[in-house]
Length: 225
Image (cartoon, rainbow, N blue to C red; front, side, top):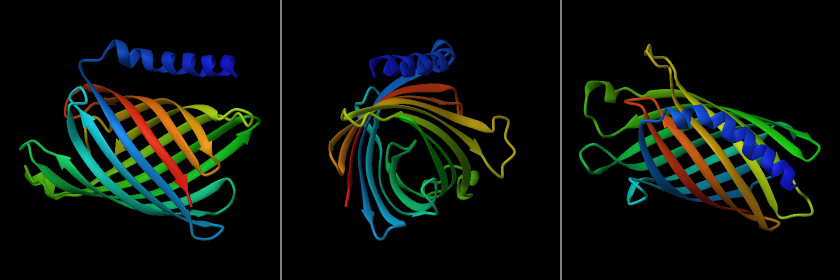
């Protein structure tokens, strides 16, 4: 198992190295996450999530949000999801303003031995309430593609994983269509059958409005009902 973890770490570092070398503005933050999955029937789940995200060396809260959604399993390998997120976000006027986000997802997964591979496409619509310029009145549309790999260890409660997610603008002619990348390496600790804790390191690069990087430690508690 340790050899597999080392290979996952090596692959992640090789992918992330070019971004780390050419970084400019850097920051550090901590994300605190609580996720709940409530089974409504064999195919339909209610998803609830709460999140607080900090920045500026983890000294300030950048945003906090609550999210609610539904996931429908078409089969064991394919699922569809829709969700709504209400965010209270710190804006340029040093005050917090509401942001509305809607998501539509399609996700697929494949099991190969002890490895679990998954891919997700997410359609995202965002509407701001803080209006600084005329363009802020328009909804913002993004596509998000995420790939993940997890190594499952049935006889051991810790499962390591890595993921990569890229964000790109939709319905808008821009010089830089891909405006954010997110690399994650983490470990899932299964405390009980329906309870788990995740510890993640996330490297996020934003290309707009200027090039900036942030290193994030994410703490996630998951439970199922």
